[in-house]
Length: 429
Length: 173
Image 1 (cartoon, rainbow over the protein chains, first blue to last red):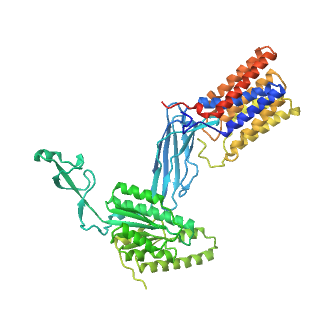
Image 2 (cartoon, rainbow over the protein chains, first blue to last red):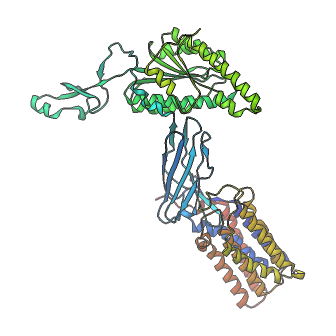
Image 3 (cartoon, chains in turn yellow, red):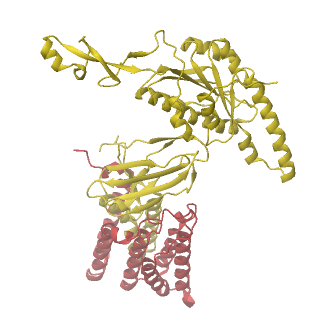
């Protein structure tokens, strides 16, 4: 490699220590005219150079496989690291970082042989989350620990999303259509996606897989198959990313829970070929426009993974105006908002006035606040009862504008699923 | 990485074979190095015990300092030892044992000492040549000058190589 090599050899502090000690002993030997220190200095001076020469002469290539198993709260990471021939896998130092939203053993288990290293980590998601499991850092280090090199691998991190299992089947719910001609629409997907509808004249741009070659041979002109998709409807998922008086840490956890639920909701509806759009309202509204398909799923997941809380409490009217600009009215809208204060309750009225039928899912801060409480048992019970009453009152107030679901058990969205399957109007007051 | 799954801070094995390999020559070297009342041997045992203890703690903040006491003891004995072929041999042997002990790090997979043999073989060979030269060459100013020149050249070469780690890289095919 040249001097600009991205993976050069690195001297470790121990190598520097040996070289300094060796040089000092050499100096003493010369000054005192005593050859004995020379015999100690020689191995110390030569060992780092020998270690560099005995190792690989470039960043060794490794093949890393990374897989995540488990459902709901369980996150089981399994993987293997296989080096290129001629490199001993036992000379690798591997570090696998645990995403901050997961808990469990800090150090994964490694089983190293000369040919490969297997690793596994059993983590747990205490609440719904989307997290990125990073590719392990693999460094080649000589057995004495004097020199090291970074390895070369093409593995990519794995994104996991853990959300309440009820969301897996929520896609069966029929959504409101917002297209001018509801019903079956022509599939824009390549190949045999959807139901066969008929044969038509082929048009420029039709992929070869869509050409009906038998019919073409019979008719003497190029004919193509046409497929229809039963489009179930459209959905807008809106996340309130504005700050609340609960503080940044609680806000961040609630927002993380909402992001995970939003991923689950979008995946479920995209699976039944509905169009899904997503908006995150912090200071301004960031959106992924309505679309369907696997690409949309990746787009939404990436957007939600990158979404973060705002530091500014923006007016709800701004969100409603911006939503109206990006999405058609009449779109079934699910709003995730903690509704921790009166200011954060104002999103649904403005959205309704702009023509969006809203259902609010509100991740409750009470479990998080109660877990962090330092009060004694009697005071704790009283405080808990009071905040529960305040919360219930706030949800009841919100019901006057739009259906609001209090989400206090983070691993279950049964109440929400029940509501969207059999919507009912709640009478308040 | 057999021991990487341990809880951070958990006590690790001291790898007794490499520890004994270090302890025996270093204690002997300490004993004969001229310290009175067997202090040299005591220093050697204390240094090895401290080094092994620091390694066994498994704490990332402490274990990197494990070689320091052993290295200090080795340097002290080398400086204090009288001139003689036997002392030079013991000094070189202790330094090699120190390298083997370094390779048998309990934080890393077992048999590190065996895997380090290609690395340790180079200084061992250099030591063998140096000691043979001291044994067979006649004493005098000229051989001493040649040996000193060679050592100075070695030191300059080491400094040059350490300053340019990319020299150890190989161009991709």
